[in-house]
Image (tube, rainbow, N blue to C red; front, side):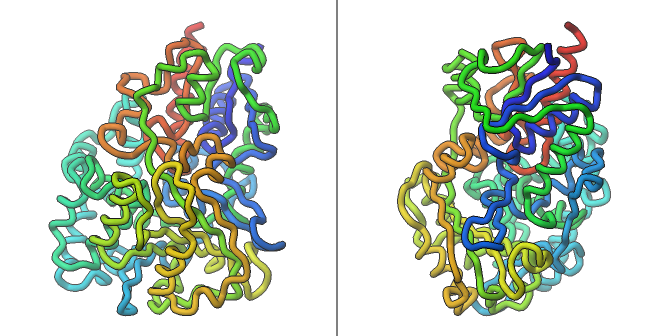
Length: 469
C-alpha cells in the first residue's frame, strides 16, 4: 500500500508529492493529461518552432516561493531568465510606468508627486520580504508567524480595497499600474484585500523579479517531476480518475483538482456547493514576425506588459466581466513577451507573444478583435507582425484543464472572503469530510499562481495524519 496518492500533476500536486517523498513517504501521482504541468505547460500551439505557454508564463510567485526555494530545481533544468524590466505599463502618449527591480526606478516612473509615496509604501516590507512571504503564504494555521508585527502591518495596509491604497497617489500612472497588478487575479478593484494583491506583486518584483523559465513554463513542471522521481516517487499520465476506486490503495489521497471535481470523485458532491468560481479569460497565443512594436521604449525591454489606458478603464473592464456578465469593449490585458530574454522560444528573428483579457464565466464569444484593437493603441502595426494565432476562450480552456471551470484560471473567485477562506470556512482548509482525503489545488490558501505553496501546506496536513496512523 502506498502512503499517498496525488491526483493531478500541476505545480501544487507535484509540490505536495515532493514534500511527502522528501520525508520518506511512498508517493504516486496520477494525471489525466498525457503530460505533467497543469497550468505550467509549454506547447507548439501555432507554427512549428514556436513554443507557447497555454496558461502561466511569467513567474513572480514561483521564484519567490518558500517551497520552491528549498528544492534543488536548478539541478533538474530549471533556469530563470530576467528581462531588463519585470513589467511595464504603457500609456497612449508613448510614456510608461514600470515595475523595476529598483524601487527608485519604479518610483521615478510614476512622476515626482508620487515617487515618495511609493517608496514609503514598500519600505516597511521589502527588507523583511522572505519572512513575510513565508508567513502569509503559510496561512492559515500551518505555521506560527515568524514576524507577527510585520504581518499585522501588512494586513492593515493590504486588507482594505486597493482603491483605498491608491488614494495615497496623486497622478494616474501609479494608480493605473497598481490597478493592473490587482487585475492579475481578476478581482474588482474595490474588493476586500485587493490592496494586498497589488502590493505582493510589486514587492515580488523588487525582491527577485518576474522571470520566465528558459524553454517555457513546462520547465518548472518537468523539474519538479524529475526531482520527485529521484526521491522515489512515481508519476502516471493519461490516467483519468472518476472515483476513488480508480486509484490504488493508499493511506492518504491528495487532490490537485477543483473542489467540485473532488466532491464528485470522493462521494461528497454537496460539500463545496457554496464555493464560487470567478470570471473567465480569453487567451491568444501569437507567433510574430519580430518584436511587438511598442510605442513606449520601456515596454520593449519588459518581460510582462499590462494593457489599460488608465485605472478607470481597467476598473470598467473588470466590472464588465465579473459583475455585468459581458465582455469589455476595451479589455484589460496581461501580456508576456518571453523572447525578450529567451531565444529558444521561436525561430531566429521571430517571437512568441502571450496575451489574455477577462470575460464572463463560460463566455462563448471571440475577443480577438477587441484585444488587438487595444494592442494597436499602444503598439501601432502589431497586426502586421502576426504570422499565426491560437485562441482559447472559456470553453476551450476548461477542456484543456478541468480545474478551469468556466475559464476561471484562478480555480475559484478571488473576491470577498474567498480571497482568504478557500475553499470554505475551516481551520483546516486542506482537509475534507473523508479523513484520508485532502485538497491541495489553487482553491486552497494561499490561492492561485505557480508557487506550489498550496501543495506544500496540504502536504503538512497529510504527513501529520500519516504519522498518527
